[in-house]
Amino acid sequence: MTAAGTAGIGPRIVVLAGGVGGSRFVGGVRGALRARGVDDTAAMLTVVVNTGDDLWLSGVRLQPDVDSILYALAGVNDTQRGWGRVGDTERVNHELQEWGAGWPWFTLGDLDLGTHLARTGWLREGATPTEVVARLAERWPLGARLLPMTDAEVDTRVTVRDGQATRDLHFQEWWTRHRAQLQPVRFDNPGVEGAAPAPGVVEALAEADVVLIAPSNPVVSIGPILAVPGIRDALRAAAAPVVGVSPIIGGRVVRGMADVCLTAIGVETSAAAVAAHYRPRADGGLLDAWLLAEEDAASAAEVAASGIRSVVAPLWMTDADAAAALAERALATAGV
Ligand code: FO1
Image (cartoon, rainbow, N blue to C red; front, side, top):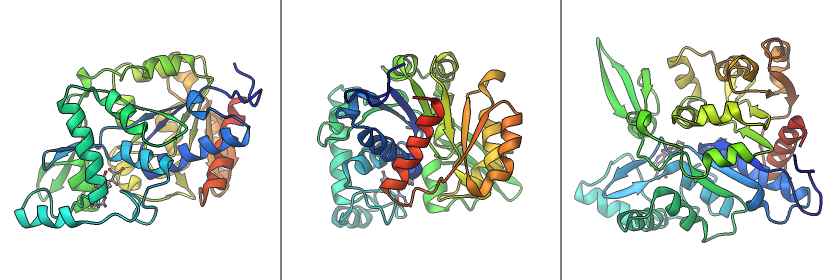
């Protein structure tokens, strides 16, 4: 294990992440490394990003979680909306709507479309998704290495109840158009069985000093990452401690609609239930330790009794300093 804070060298960290919670937390990890005096944070911090939200729309490839983390680390994200580029305009989107192209409920900003066009062009020229993400990341000094969970195209489909019947939607339609209001019956990632971890993912997990599970949606952000054959095994085999951060504070989701997703898979919306969902590593699961909020301190004993070390900490990532303090707490929990 690398001694933290020694001559600008920190622990090798892998974070599993997706969505807004993931991007704030990853920014916090970078902040914690900087506060320890680590200069080259990108050499220490690898982020394995959910690509289960990805889709083709109007001929371009969208990678919402990759872009959320890319834009947030670059400081060009729209913090009000929680997605896309700050200060973006929608001229092309209006034109697409006039053509009846794309989805009327799904906005593609002009600057954001630049990203999608660049990505699609490189994919069409034969670059792999991993190479494309690396190329996108060259534009800004992100201070982290981003890896997609897989190079395979893996969607998330949601089966919803529709009267007596059920029907199947792309995750983005369910999430964005229906605001997760159609009752989900199940989530699937067709094609994931044949997917492999992206190059570098298994190696990063094997070489890590600590693995962090971000406070991202456990079902549709972390779930698809863990569903890629080989990633769960690599996590279990990792020498590093695995520390998770609860996405539930005071029995409620912080943002997004994770509660609806958890209910659909039979998991209660509580910090303890999400820890139990990931399961203790000693019992064939993933977690060595779990950070839960002060508001959920009453369930710390229950988590500890299941064989997961529980640590009560302030979990609200209200600003960059709070996110860095939370990340530092996660690193300290792992003893790195
Ligand atoms: N979320 C919305 O609520 N409305 C949108 O119109 C929308 C467009 C969009 C375009 C590109 C992109 O990368 C993300 C976009 N999102 C939009 C966010 C996205 O639907 C989800 O929040 C994430 O996939 C969940 O992590």
